[in-house]
Length: 245
Length: 245
Image (tube, rainbow over all chains, first blue to last red; front, side, top):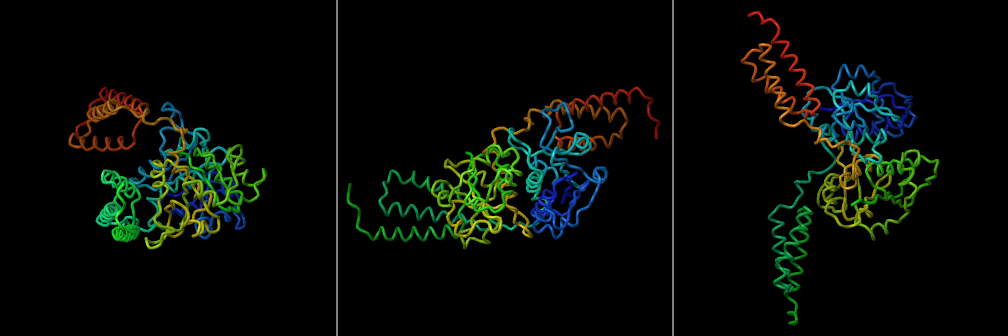
């Protein structure tokens, strides 16, 4: 399920380039433009497109809004939503995260439609789309720049469109529970070796457990820390016993 | 918990403006720049900042990287992560969504640090930060433009930073369950009135229930549809009985 991305009457070539780059960053490639501006090789469109200047941007299709409505399940993006359910042009709407969920079940060809820099999609255009999507932002200033709105929206759809991210498989890298428990045992041994007050040891161990638990340590981190604890415990045991207080 | 946002040695004023705009869109206001470029009132910084040209952008602070490390819990952003846990400069890292969760519990002053357009943050800089964050993107082309990376990151932190979005309270607008059940009853009445084959009625009702359930209808939508069903049922009942097949 890779949606196409359409832009209606963009005036600024740089925004088209920004959108093309975001498409490539998040695994999409089908760019459509209604009434495109001049998109020369030396325009900001190409300057802003990054590696998308090689494929997404030069391969864009010029289309009409009517063609989008006729051939796709259409999703219109807007910053301005209706306040309530009495008017239907801009309500109900979904957030990009909700859109990702609902499109995950869609079988149709989908196009995300972004409007003009100046005033987005018109009421007439929004009335013709199948779904409305709106990015939650500050009530004081909810209007994102066109390129930034597209970037956020495509980012949220990444689970549908990106086959493989640049990130390693993090789960695999987490330390296994036995190793982490070994670390806690080692920490308790150290507390004993340094004569940490007995009545405080349980509380201290809970604190350590919470802290390390939140950090989701890697195997490497735990192995390193266990080594440090072992050496510290050995040194403490070899040292003179502490003076009684 | 509103993080500050720092940019290290940005070369392109337009990117600074884009970041300032995203900050205002997502409720942040404390912009810091290490070695800023020229940021004249007629530069692209102001051209790209939208309404942030009035406050976030002109109020930026010029800082050093050392000052950030000394005074904040630092989060470094990078597209390039280590492949595994053997090297610690770029691993472990969190995604922006994970960062939002972990910062929700942080009491400290936090700064998000974005690197240069050309090559991000250096290994030396990343070695000095407290957390590393990386945006999941296509393995084929994971490098987002600086302004776009900041936009996605600040968007993900919106629950921590935006007091009130422009969106109406959607939960309140959903039709209540009794009304939706009334709609289903009305639909079943219509099926009976139009002599829909009895053996198919249960299956049809399940289909309708799934479809409407996924759409999370508003009270207004359900009221409208119930009216339509009622009229259709009345007309069907008033019409001649169908010919037997």
